[in-house]
Length: 494
Image (tube, rainbow, N blue to C red; front, side, top):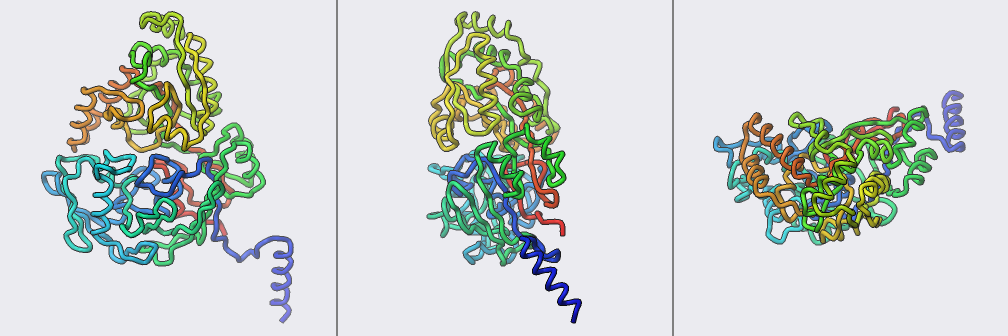
């Protein structure tokens, strides 16, 4: 009898000291993020924070991305493609249910894809569905998608968060009460503070190790550092104070994961606003910028220089940084040639991330050195989306475009930087209709050169993914091939 009594006594002492018994496995996690989602519908908004919380956790698509960026089966367990590349027949997984208990079937897939491509759709990536001609529910487990023309990116497009499958019954409250098919179901949103998820017991796939997960929103970098050091949180995804990373690396309580993202960080330029509609003016801006100083000053060295809107880790990437090297004298000369020998003034509207706020101050000083004055306005994320992204009311801005393989946005004249080039538009149409890998690579490289030569935006750096976590937390993605904090494989060392 003495041995069990000793165990009970040890357990009581541990609990009294605020410690869990050694055999008690942790099944909860609290992950912090800097940005809070404006709502919880990934199919109806541009904010990346929506996907960061919900992608793969609450919502799933026909296909999905892995950490390496590979496209693998999701809710579709397999598919067949017709010889002409126009018809995709998807076989849906058996036994999939939404979190409200209703069964997923082909009608839900048809509803989701049709809703995303409707004329009045609010889907931020509506072009993902542009090639679709029709969607047919063949039977409850089979969906046939017919394209108007071949689309070599179709399976890739279906892996985006904007293409997740939703139930018609949940649409009315999806922005505040999301209902998906993922391994976690939505529990509660305390706006301004946190979102709670709970493991979905009837999940069709492998059950996650975690029973509960909390996403905590901490916008201030100083507060982020304090919360992590105090161990009030278990991990901070995309840690907003890179200057503190060496301190975490030296602390055995923590681990620092450094990976790549799809985030092309750019100085966005409103190509429809004078004098920014002049190519020479945009070229002058590009040569006024010292991108390495921005990387060092805003990101403390974390980031890879880019000269076009394309990820350096992609095989088709072309290094065009020399086209926009730091050359203030050339910048002044170009401004004079464009009719602005004394420079001009414009606005610089910045969203909350530290790369934008810190980078904005550095770039404003670099532009001032060649005669361009900027009026800096710091905006909250919802304000930025409304004022800059939706209403195009800006001269300059800084933002990281974290969507994967998104050079196609330059073929959309109504996109927020309002670049209208028929040559590029025709090239992207040809690219979308091409499936041959070598031909696609050549066209992607041509597209990079076109936008670099037109100096559409100021190309700064590829955003690094820096995550700080407790040392015994396992399974977090180091890389970010899409905007996601995928918790499906996360667990604690025991």
